[in-house]
Length: 387
Image (cartoon, rainbow, N blue to C red; front, side):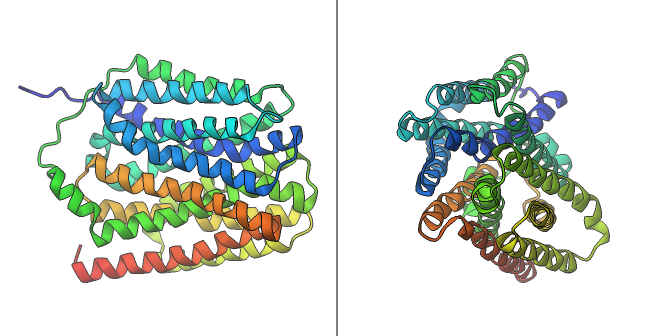
């Protein structure tokens, strides 16, 4: 029996779905100043919030395969509605309600985001087959747009009661879009068996990519998750201004990533990597010692520019290392990366509680060094294996 092909517009709607994924994951960093304004809390509680989000992503690895039995389209709608419901629940339990309620809501947001990502990776195969690096880069750019949109929306509605009620509209709209989109799984002729994909997932190359993205997402979200609180407590910035600076960070990262994609074919990769690492580390150094918004803005620009080129470099390597596409393999790599994006800021909660909020800029600096080392190891592995 002939397998129905996925219509091209439907697959691109799936790629655009990464916008919602970024939106959901960036919300916590943007919403924390609003919660703290209602009732001040310890930095260890912030770490617990991020940990709850990470546990939700882990839980999604068990839930998503069961939901997938109903079809990919159902899976997308389910994830969007689950996110919408979780955000509405969070809007009803702001401080001074017990923090455990917000942790529960964030766990469900993580569950929804992990399930959404699993569905998205199942629907982009045609795009990946025609342009592996381009598809991964496009998904990353849409993801960045979602992060920027989250910061801008929270900033625009900061003084509106129940901010999260407005924020919940976005995943509800995506649920409506996917409910009216016919998504059928495309034929995957010549694709590897599940056993081969699992072997590749355990391969040195796949583990190096997963570790690299784990640290890179950890770096990006350590800054994004803690930047508003850092500016409020370290510089005395107003909450709304702090969130606007967060939006500036996401914009610097997004613009830098878009420029890096176009510049990648014309620039030596070693020089680009070296410049990126130096820029990010210098930006972290400035942010640690600045005492004014101009210094903070300069640091954010340097950090965003430094982080920006890492993902395109990785996307190009992934496209060459894995010319075939297997959704389980890619979802495994990126789910692990997203966990890094939440585990790192969760760890910073403990550091900030013991050594003050100034400690939060040092972990991304160390993580940037790890990214540099892992990229060198990936290049070395490629030379040794000839892949």
